[in-house]
Image (cartoon, rainbow, N blue to C red; front, side, top):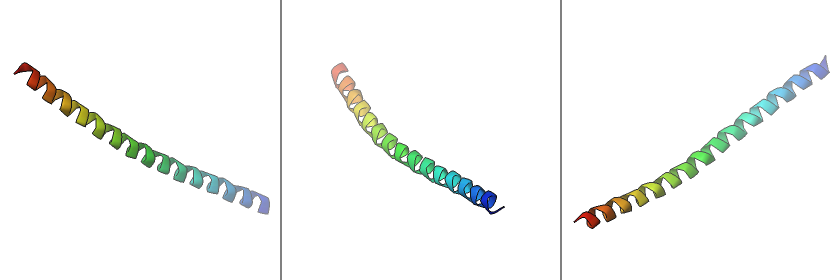
Length: 56
């Protein structure tokens, strides 16, 4: 019986660690995505300014 309880605790621990890893991975991805989105928005602003100046 002790083997089964140990196995159950081990499974819960593995699931818990996987959830923590997943959350950290999502947070890293979102941080990178925010940085990339900011850079894209700056480039779009520059393009819009260039196109406005070109038309004038």
